[in-house]
Length: 450
Figure 1 (cartoon, rainbow, N blue to C red):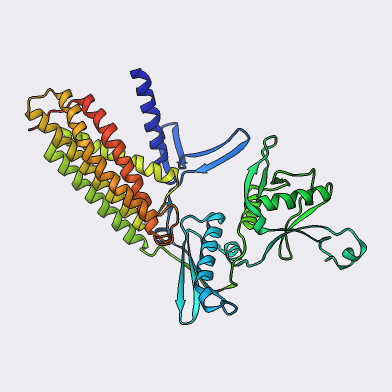
Figure 2 (figure 1 turned 90 degrees about the vertical axis):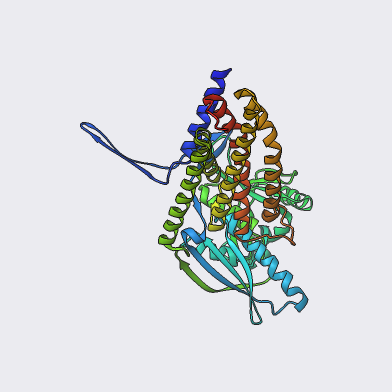
């Protein structure tokens, strides 16, 4: 049993180390005829499980303030709206734009509404993005999604546009589509796009496929043809698959276009600029140095005050940092300056947990308890206070993160990044403080100075 536990622990820590490898870690060795000159990329997965293709790169993702990116400003045309409807329409447009940008693959965009005089504007910050032409087209699209079938009579064919003979509306529009997702064919592994319709849309789609077996259905955004899949059979259950010679990127773009919906108000791009990291490389480097100095001082305090217990606490704290960073890459979390602040705050809580545990253990040793008994009782008495403090912090973090998107709580911006790193850090500190620190104390049995 102990060997199994040791094996699981080894596999766990190897995985953590792999996930924490620096970006593009260079390794150069020149020892006689033995030479290594390579670059280790961060841990990644490229495989296929049960017909589903999995491609994940566990890179560190940085926000706009640390990595730079693009800043866009759109102006909303609200002239056709009643004054009481303007605010709701602009907020709805902001929500749709953020959803579109997220579908496009940009992590943690900052999308905000800004009033300039009588103008309603929406600003979009795209971290790490410098080529934004396709994103601009996707964000600004105001057209309607619709499904068309082939023209069948001479009158329809005479009026059909030359580029395609799809002019007859099926009655299916974007409101009838629940979602579009990228899938992979279980036989060939080729990318395809799955469609899921609403209850009303399923009925309309069943009728359309029944009428058009062997023919083509066109998926349009206004007059722009997105796709023209051929109907193979009647589809009565509201779930369909668009197949073709898609690349993964092409399938993703098609799914994005179908999902993106229509903006409630027309918008136009009035400003675009690429920006560098707002903190600058020098400031980021200074922040890292300050963080290292602060962490070193905490470790020195723990070692000088608690001696051997402090050494164990330092080891646990370093493991805590590695596990947290691995989680940031695994989820992934986009690191911004507020996000780093949340992580640093959680480090302080991890140190507090160790201090509570050590003081409780010392109290039991003073009472004459044996070492193992003192550790067990000390942990048992400290854990209640630790859980109460950490659960309260997690609840506050959840309020800031607002996972249900309640309107009276923060819904956008970097405060959610702060909340997310804080929550992950606190949960990880509970694990390291209760599990790892306890195992290290029972294994090394350090001397306790009372």
